[in-house]
Structures are given as C-alpha cells and as structure tokens.
Image (cartoon, helix red, strand yellow):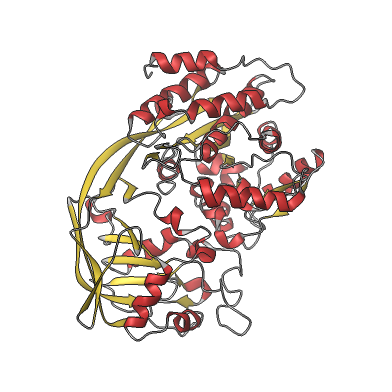
Length: 553
C-alpha cells in the first residue's frame, strides 16, 4: 500500500460526502471536487515518473478505497507496473536539409518537430537520403502498398498524414478504399512510424496539415521533444533514430527546392500504382543529445467483485496522466494539468464506481482502470493489454471516458466509431431513455476511435465504446449544434494539451453528467446481465473476437 502524504489526505477529506441523496446517481459537485483536486498544482500536471505521479497514484487508491472498492491489479495489488522509456531531446547540435549541396537549417518547433524512442545518449542522422513514400501504407487486405519493395535502410521516409482516400475523389484508386472520410488505423501517425521502422528507415517525417491530422501545429509541438515507449528488448527497439513532423510550408519548400511539386505528389499518392519518390539531391542531417531514463509508472486498477460470474469483466477506463510541467503561458501557468483531458474522465470513474457500489452487488465483476501514459501513445493500456490481469476473451466490454464537453446538456450523444460494434446499439437504447438521440462523429477523419485507451483493448478483440466530447458538435440545449461546435473550436484551438486545460468555474457540467450517467447505465446493464456485445460485420476486430468465442459459451 502506498503511503498517502498529508496534503493528499487533506484533499480526500475535503471531498464532499460520498453518500448520495439526490435523484441523479451522478453528482456534479463530486465531479467538480475531483477535477479541481487532480488539476491542482500539487499534482504538477500528472506526468508519468514525476513527483506528480506519486501523488496521483496515492490519491486514486485512497479514493477507490473510500468508495469501498477492492484492489484490482495483479496479485491483489492496487497497481500494475508499467516500465516506460522516457526520452527528451536536448538542443540540436545539427539540424537541417541539404539540396544540391545547399544547406537549409531547420528550427525545432518552427520547421520540424522531432523526438526519439532510442535508448541512447545521442541520436544522429548523417546526411541521409530522403524518400517520399506517399501515405506510408502497406495494407495487403486492401490491395495497397505504398512501398513497392523500396529499400529504405539508412534513409528518411517522408509521408502524408491520414489515409490514401482522405482527399480522394471518385475515379481515384484510393476512393473509398479505407473508409472514406473515416480514418482507419493506417491513417494514424503511430502506424506510419511503426511501418517506417518495419521497412528499415533511419528516420521518418510526416508532412503536417491540420485537416489531415485533425489538430494544429501547436498540438504537434506540445510534447516539447519528449517521448515515451514501453521498455523493449534490444531486438525490438525501433530502427528510427528520429521521428516527427515537418510543418506544411517547410515541406512545400523542401519539395520545391528538389524540383518536386508536393501538391501533385499528393494526387499521385492516391493511385495504387504509386511508387516511392526519392527527393533528388536532398539529404537530412540531425544530431541531438538525449536525456533518457526508465520510468517506473503505474496503472491503477480497482474492482467490485461479481456475485454470480466473477470471471466475466465489465471494465470502465480513463487515463490519469497529463503533460506535466512546461513553459509558462500568458497567465503564468506552468502545469499542463489536463483538467478535462482527462481528470474529468477520472472523476467520472469515481462517480460510476460510487453509484454501482451503492446498489446491489453486480453479477459480473466491474473493474475500474486508471491508465498511465495515454498522452504518450496509449502506453499504460497497451502494457495492460500485453499483460492482461483479466483475460480479454472474458472481458465483456471496455467503456472509456476521455474528454467530456463542459457546455451544458445536449439533445444528443456523439458516437465515435460508427459501425464498429453492437455497443453503439446499447448507446442508442440508453440515450433514448434519457430523451436523447445518437449523432455519429462529424469528423471521423480525425481517427479518434484509434486515439484513446479503449483502442488497446479493441486490438485484442474486446468490444469497446468511447465517450469523447470533441468527436462532434453536440446539439446543445442552449445554442444547438453551433454552440456545440463553438465549444469544440475553443477547447481544441486553445487548451487541448495546453496549460489552459485547467479547472474553470464557468464550466457547465450538466452535459458531462449526462454522458457519465449514460456509460453507467450501459455498464450496469452489462454487469447484471448475461449477454456479450459483439463486433459488427466489417469491423477489423471481429475476427480477433471470434477466435475466442468458445471461452464465452
């Protein structure tokens, strides 16, 4: 058991009484108190491996204990170890491109953003040839291969963000090949870096554009040269010395300097006959010192044991980590504390746990997972999924809370990942009971389905459902969809991953309460029933789940 420092103990005691007498099972005052606590300076932005993590873990355990839950981790512990490699690039000793012998220096944060997952004290790329590889996709089941056997060893792969059909028009080979405007995992930057490494590249750079990425350059640079990975065996370490992004105008200039037209190449990359295009006479050079450490981070797992089928697990999840300390913003705030992303989700877990615990014991076990290192690439949930405490084949569902809208009640709820699984039917059923409808995410090209911790479970076949307020403009009771979009634009444009994602007294938590209550009702129904949600035909996860069907008979 972790020792709870006095300051944290005082915060727990200051939390409003856990007993509920109000008609609604979800209490906004409880949510407010939890968010204000987790987003306070005491927790220093909740970065993995920091003093803020130690305080966060102690606080989470104490809160789950106070709610009457049991340890849900391995060997009866509250926590699951998650060893992480933490790297941070120092000031560049060399950085830039050379075209036909003419060197062009690049500035970190302005022209390019870089990080490394190498466990080394220095990373360097010495005048490596650069190759444009389209969207960097190798998808044999779709008859698509951007690499065509090209030798990328010792080279820097340059590619576009999103899927080959993101900008495709009718007549293009890529048209509707990957889901149209709905991003597949092939469109995610994580996949592209992984594939570049599988192809043997020494470095990889994505050309940034806001529509394709789903966020602006300010979000790209927000980690400030830091990166995290699971600790890997030497033979599993990526080949990439450096990975990152080229700012759009810097990329256009680079291609133009080599005599290539990036706009024309974007169109060419939508053809299945596309072949990698070397950037003529262009080389990339960079040398960075690296500060590295192995961080012993932790997931926190709590459970309510089932009375009839305790080996069948309904799991709720949210991530406890944020971005830690950074440069002061205009108001002098140095901690990027993630009040909404995702202290609000953690607060939702506490409320769901309190509501379930206050009623009759569920038939199935209910597990609450507070994940580490989501902001570093879903690493806490990925570590769990690699070393599961509860078998994925007996995990009924994973219900995730990650960013909830704070602009008041809505007439609808936003569905992320339309067409994936039958849990979306549950969402519609229970939303109707609230007097709400379901609206599919209006920006599926952002790939939000692949950008939260539930995805680690989906890859193992576990049916999932994500509640994420930035997935689409909610039809707000006050102001309609225009007001919902205004909230998204304000949050993602100003505060997403920034210091201003802080507790704000102007928040209206009524909408968050609706969404938390909705997940509570779906999860409670599953926990007290016998049915197993399924993946729908066409989902890339259905075959994985089907292989373990005998375990659920």
